[in-house]
Length: 212
Length: 212
DNA sequence: CACCAACATGAGGATGTCCTCAAGTTCGGC
DNA sequence: GCCGAACTTGAGGACATCCTCATGTTGGTG
Image 1: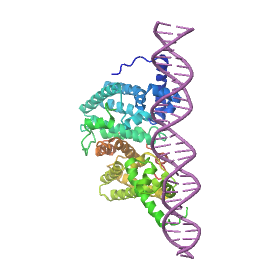
Image 2: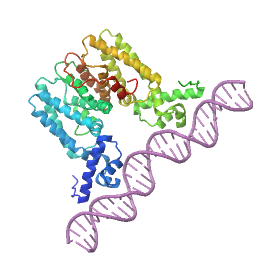
Image 3: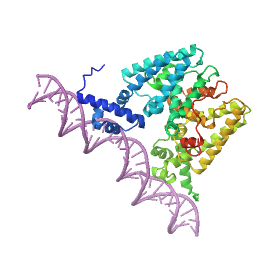
């Protein structure tokens, strides 16, 4: 879209510093952290931050690109597992682990941030991989057949709530919550669910284009 | 503790109005809603709000007294159910319903607000009833034996996250999340959990004295 | 009905965050 | 090494919310 000519060396350096600082600050304080603090942490002025990233969302998008990539790696690893169920469990656990250690990543699951075209595309890819993880686990009879990909969002949304409450008190408590949820996802003890799953349009509206 | 002499008639009236307004505004906008808005909604000045409720927390405490009472009623009703499991499910569903329709109640689960002595006592009572609900369901063999009362907190924390994401898009989606979680709580499909439950001290620190 | 304590009022200072922009500085091609 | 474009800077205006306090109003008691 926008033909971006290469940045000058100093501008490029500052951009990298800002992204690094944003990762640190967001991880600690969440996505609502004051931009001044990110600028200070990066060793540049607030004006420079606005020069590099016109909006808060643009910075968020850039800062979390690595997490998006990490998610894709997790999904790949999950699909490489011979046991479809343990692949699914592995994937969910890795995502939850990220959420547990990074408050920004957790916030990201709870709100819908406008994404760049690249991020949206990467997320859509991740989505497709998750779909395969789910289908594989269902085909093997391990994952209950009445859940859809959209239901995995419950894991992330729900988990984010538990982590927010317990991160400071019992950093590992979320593993127990996830354990309960995984048992609820198994075919073995499944009981009919009360309402139909979210349809793709609803998921999109709940998480923004590209999903999470 | 503090011998509070009765309020003058107009002051009493304003107090009631403020509590009513706070319920409305908190339900819509959450606990961070500006106090000015509550005062305006109650038809009094911001100064009067501060006269009646010295701190934001005091107002929250007063505004949610009815919800605490409602929780106790739900617990009673649950214990009156002949089927211990359906009693437990009923209780969780009612709480989640409140969370789904009242953003303030949801926020309350996610943060720890200082409570008045009365509220704390009422919550402790509710807690004790929840303990009975859990024990009864376990005794009947319906609820898995390796969960504790503290694990129910995962339901509320987790559910709050899901509702926050889906309330505007699919107001009933939380029922599905709850359904999955309930299946995870059943004895039938239980698998060992990875970490020990929160101990009472941790629960207290996570939710403030009296719990929620 | 008169009086004072109790109460209500809302302008305004304090705070924190956002974002802009005019002035100064640095990069890098020539 | 010079110059223009690219970049950085940080003070400052805009905004939202907080909470206080001096002043004016009202309830209810004697």
